[in-house]
Image (tube, rainbow over all chains, first blue to last red):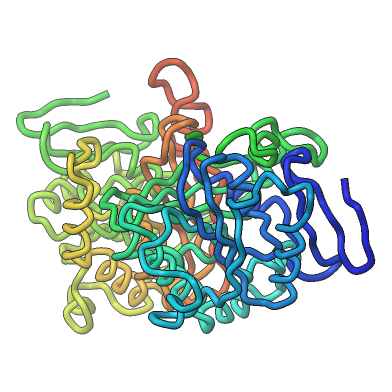
Length: 259
Length: 259
């Protein structure tokens, strides 16, 4: 399903419902993580959605593809990835999103006035989804897990991104994050006092192995207790074929949390 | 399997392998939580185990029953529960634990000299298990989840108990906690910088419902990354019968983490 141009590929998602123009071979190529993140939105979601660290726009467009009432702002700071997001938005296969998807070139970690000037006004979104860039190296586990942890902790990345999400989302607005399980403590710490009614959904490649990802969903200023949801199992057969549920979620036919 | 005496019951666990003398009707009656907690120990564990907040001794004796090389110190501060722990240790059905199980009447939250004087010397244990008393109200969910959270946060209970566990356990020694999912953030925050290589195992009553408990296991001063393990499902049939795996764990025939 990929049309290849020198230095870039154009890949179909949601069985051809939308297309992504992405760097070829290297960089932040979108895949299942972005689809799982977009699937965290309830199917009846409508309103303004911000995709933090959007890359070429995978999660944002997947959300717009499934939720027809969603208006999406892709937020990306890396100039090369922002350029791919522009090519994605201009792609004729994405004409259905005209007027429903725009790009803001800005660093998600901006604060106060700088964030507002960049186009991310306080309380102006109904939902924020984020796939922080740390996950880019996702399929090459580091031999030194502590080094990874230290790296993320030094960055304060989750704190900065979740602080920004808390600022731009309206009260009772939503947040969804996809991350590695190792980041769970930092995510919960950064959400404390900002987001409540958190739901953690583990994603396992196989039912008998530890989770490879978590999707955490929560609501701004909500008071509900944290829930740990039944996991999603990606593969339940002998090969690498998706389970029926994972396939439907990956193709935009089903939400991750069943709502 | 219960012999009733006025004001107390004597109940068999692990299919009659050991007995607990407990208050009748009220108070901290032991059940599946204590069995799941004890099951967090690897089957080949041997060494000194502290059971923090031991109550009548359920988790500690369940560990000693499955791990024949374990020497158990029950730590309980409430005088009435400590008295039940004494009756439990004196019960003829627990004669097999003579010389392997003792009681320390002390508040787990003690620090420094006071903790040492109470009989909990720094670095003197190989493993600590804890079932914090907050869980006592476990089968009666509060209508106000925030009130529960606030209560626990005001207590700083996990911080105090995990700080004590970090003091009394040797380097690379183990910690296992059973708690409600709502406490996950506090547990991870209290473990940060003290315990590593954490493994979180969710326990669900039914496969399609949110987890009712988490068991968190970790090692003192270890550097491994956090893992989110496949869940345990308690009931997989039409009634309230345990699943085969849950039944085996409840009866001391299988460890919770498969080791």
